[in-house]
Image (cartoon, rainbow, N blue to C red; front, side):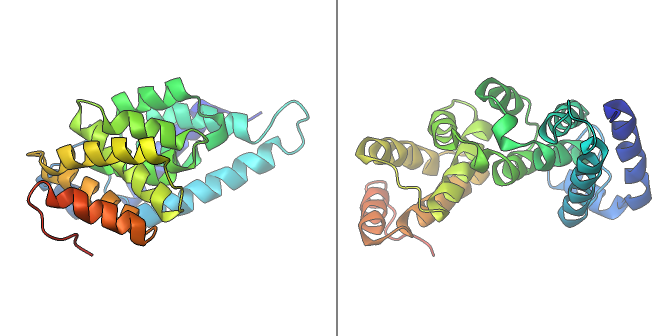
Length: 224
């Protein structure tokens, strides 16, 4: 039997061994403020996530009533509830995409506290959801900057995988991206521009659409 609460306690204790006060302080200065931040690197957290996944796989291997995904989902949900940077990032790395229902994705998005967590969740989890495109289109139309930013990061990943939207989707995406490019929020503008760059990378037709669109708001070129 895999004890979720004990594992969370063990994980939180392990962060003390890798505490990087300088990194944590630097993050606070850049506006990445968390309830608790140990300054652990993404690389270290990814290694930890792999070790945890392997540990859970071994723990449930001999139990016919258990699966790998269910304990991983339970652990992910429990970690996400912690007001700790490293716990939230680990949660995004451990959550099985096929186990995450749309309502839970919406809840996590609402509870996302920083740009870093939005970016990590988009990269580690949201881009892999079976309904990723639907959420991305929904979120770029949000009135919350952080939700929009996350949506554009998902769009970027989908475009990089050459998931091409239909004509209606293209029109909707371009309209929202142009609005985001004129936002006072610099991080949102950057995320929208990055998504347009990846959109244009899907082919000459897409590049022409993107270039033509941004000229309508006084931008003469698409950065590469």
